[in-house]
Image: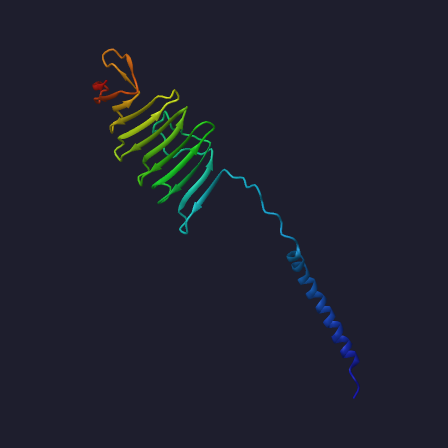
Length: 201
């Protein structure tokens, strides 16, 4: 029986052709895998980063040039726009939160309750340093050291009226409107209209 040479030759040629095709398909991927890993990105630019949980609820933000979401609280000390900040949320953006903000000269730390009301502030503002504690009805106590080095502890009622001061204070005579400066050893009690009820010394 004669050996089917032509069949063997045809089978070999077909195998070589198929092998070439498979090689061409596999080599590019092997070449990519063999390439060196690119160097990691050293600088990442963005105006805001957000942290979300598995439900998609925002739990934190790191941002620049952002609008403060609570304006009006102590406008003389808290700007409505600041250069950058960090916020962490307990129950979403409208729940309890911690907020840190900075600008070119000032900085602040604020704590919010579940109603998004500020309950504590630590502030550096226009050269003054202060710590404020507030209750849910907005009455507050403030410890302040101003840019001149004067220090005081002040109490305010729910309407924002100055009711007591310990340390350096400035009061106004209701009848004349004349401002009076009191030394750091002073204790003052005032009524809701700002009239001095008692002071020592």
